[in-house]
Length: 439
Image (cartoon, rainbow, N blue to C red):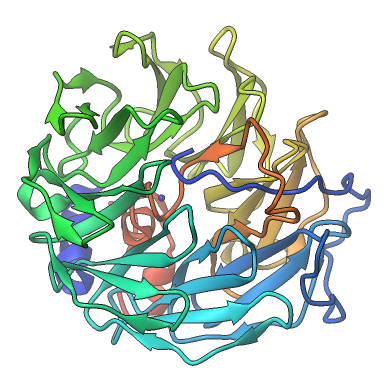
């Protein structure tokens, strides 16, 4: 990854970590053609729907997980980059405008797949997280150096919370009491008390923290410190005292931190090293790095904690890793430029958004489903141009599973622009007016 290119994009433009509770999805259908269509009904009780942010098309595509059929695209504000869904599954909040104009959050009613009135958040919104009780969405606004709380009951933004230069990621503790914000410009993590929306003293970490994840028991937060793609540490933070512990060495340019649902291991993907490093959360010691594909970025982990999946953006593959042995399996071929992944709660299907599939001469911009039983990719699902992010609704929000899928997303993982500027040789940034390429 060219760190100068990322720096220019950051200056010019300026994500378990958040586990989703989902219902079982259908088995993958056979056949080579990309699925297309517009007759998918809106989400309803018992159904599972994927929502795909199409960055260049300025739309969100709903996909039925039962049939892997896309529905009618939902228009949203320009440049959608992330989606957060309320725990009750009723509303998807779409983050738009990062780096390319005024920032907005658009609420989408999942029962009707209709967009509501956009909520203006200004500046450069790069990450969004929702509290476990579903009452508040927090938006990190990088250029304004603030986090903006939004009441989900009224869709009204509250008073901005000043955290410091370039807040880039947010993770909320399982009890919902504290939001931890990675503040890249100050090399700090800032805790926010959600009851009062006030900050606690900042916690010093490594250079340019851009990903953060919290263990399922809420005792430890892990902040990945990539620097300008030239650093290689993760800082553990004891949440009871808000104190940083000694840095842990991982691969060069850590992108994502994903913690197994049993809380035993944190996996860290390292973009420049082409590796994933396992960290024993009981000892905070790193194991031997696991070699995967080129530019490993987003990760998800199955609910039983047995398998981790990592998207290799420049290899156009997804690598499964057996957590019992920390051995990588054969790579799974997907579309071009996978960055973020999503997984269903039953662990049967992984989905990857193929950011640059269209320019590869393939079938176009797609989402690829992967059966975790066979580690085989199903037929690609046609979506809008520039699919960057996937979120999935919970089918039975009242039935909270003991184990939930884990992963790295635009909330707790690196912001979208780092993926675009760093990993992908022909990126959406170019279509938005930036010249981005390998050098």
